[in-house]
Image (tube, rainbow, N blue to C red; front, side, top):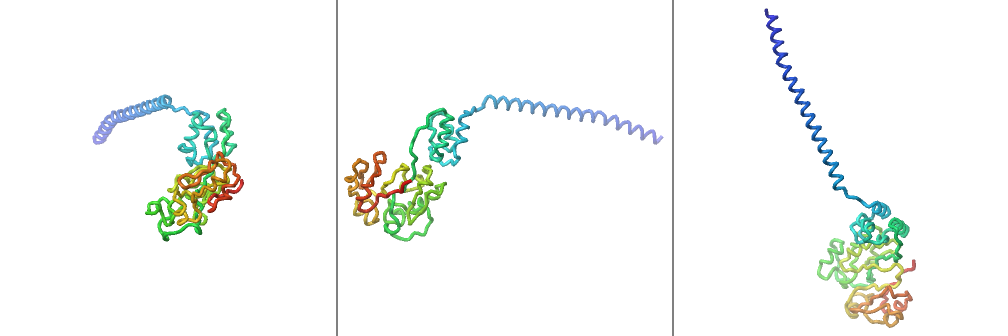
Length: 290
């Protein structure tokens, strides 16, 4: 009797479990179908969106980018090499717009674009100051942060008596990614053989002393002070005194004095050296031949 009761109980439990198992299997199947359906919908939607909103890239842009150095220095005036590659591909920049790339790279880019390469002379940075430690007067010893932009905030723009010259704390040096500029005897000096012409250093000089000049330029005025001769000499023995002897010596109308300071027109200068020969303070610096 007890055996029959146990068998009846087991049968009852088995009958009760069967619908539950059926319901569970059905729920799993439904859930699986829903997940699969949602996944299919998302996949189709993403595929449609990718096709609809696809940004087509000019194949020439990719090829131009491959021939740029990847320095991302901004010397070209565009936001990195990607920006320049796009500008060249769009015809908004010349094939030789990158100052860091060499002639071979420029020629390759011109070939990719199917245009003639425009011949332009390379430009390099030049620091318009020759006031070395033995020539410039010092007002006090500075022991603060060695950064020209921070020193420029101090009244008088640093410890040198000439507030227009090179401070010598190397902000330009740190800006150069090509090891082309160093502090030598208290002022910044540019090695034009290493200089790529990216102009990054020009942006870091608070006195705007660094200018881009033609690579072939040999005679350059190493001063930026607009003060009169007497005041210039009181601060630095190598400053331009605006005497105009260089103007009289030049037979090519290539040098003039404006605001007590000599300026050279590199488009007219023949590098004859007459201006440097007559300069009483030797402020016209002679660059070595390449």
